[in-house]
Length: 141
Image 1 (cartoon, rainbow, N blue to C red):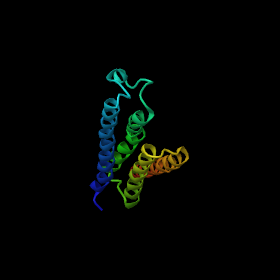
Image 2 (cartoon, rainbow, N blue to C red):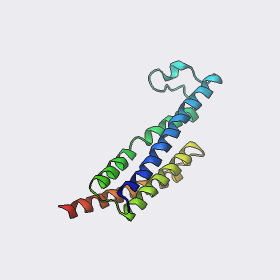
Image 3 (tube, one colour):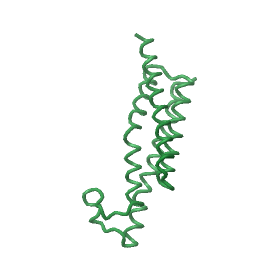
Image 4 (cartoon, helix red, strand yellow):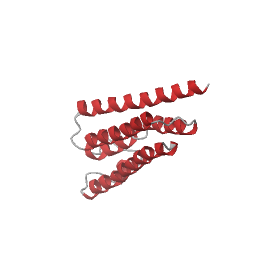
């Protein structure tokens, strides 16, 4: 197995994050054209006047920049130390898939219990990746 294959899920999550980022100005512009917001509503972030369906995209984007940073770090750690395994690769793809599902729930019907379940599963996959990385590092010592 190629160690660099771990970068495909990394690229996939980065691409998904980019797509969510592109959705943000689309929702903001549409809201501005409908006069639901003004440019001043975004001068210091998002004011309380911004409708939830507009600010939700920003919140989801921020979610994709929080815990996934640990995903990017563990993937680089596994690659640099030669610790990429089929299990690690499978967990990485599971993490990415679960984060995409989390975003789709969040940005569509947004049922909290569904979102929480997927978020918890994604965090489980992330913790498992870190356990694999830790075990690999211990074996190297």
